[in-house]
Image (cartoon, rainbow, N blue to C red):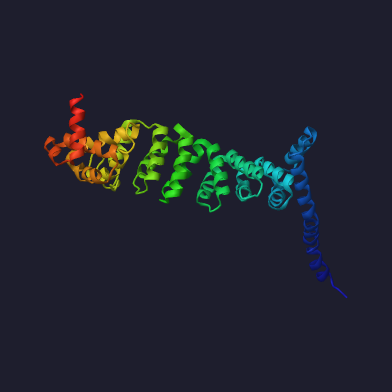
Length: 323
């Protein structure tokens, strides 16, 4: 026979057990409700779509776990609707991870909807989305690029972080996306100029083209170019040295472009300290680089013209006669 203490002790657990029973019983129901709502969101019937939006608004953030499960394991229409629903959550930042996972879906429409959802979330989704530029699956990388392109200026800090990884492929992807953002990407110009310090000419061309598309102030670009190869924490801002020259001469392979013109001007201002880099490009560069280097060397010291290769002396003398 129980005494009053035993009865009281057992009764304490009744509310807890009842709550657990309700949760266990409602779990599948909630999942079914989320899938039903997702289906309504992509219905061909306008009235059904309105019902889906009403259900989404009524359940609010509580429906998110069910939509996340539906995005991963539902049928095609359900996955598409779940992607839309997750993009419309009251606290959209909480939907970043399920939408990121959705970028690997087999269906292109699902991937596109997830990418647009991440783009709509913006700043909160940018760091996680930018990391996907390193993903091994090209479909995921394409989805991430689409999402980042929709974020505008919100994506810039995350893309700058990708430039700092110093992975050539990732640098090229991040730079290309910054170019798409245009003037919104102006804060990325210093990092892009640092990214010019690469032996991969393909990456250099992509980065240089991005800088030209963004169109920074020439004075700012000139300053950043002069600082290449220096420890910026200890180097005086007015110092111009030859450390940058070996990167600048590579830009001469893009004659007539804004950044190449600034590089040419910067090398001319450097004077004699640029000579080692200019001499190196005389033997390794393409025709445009070699001609520009020869002109710069004669500007540093006219006597250096006698030390130029024969073909360049003929080129320079012909150019001078035609002036």
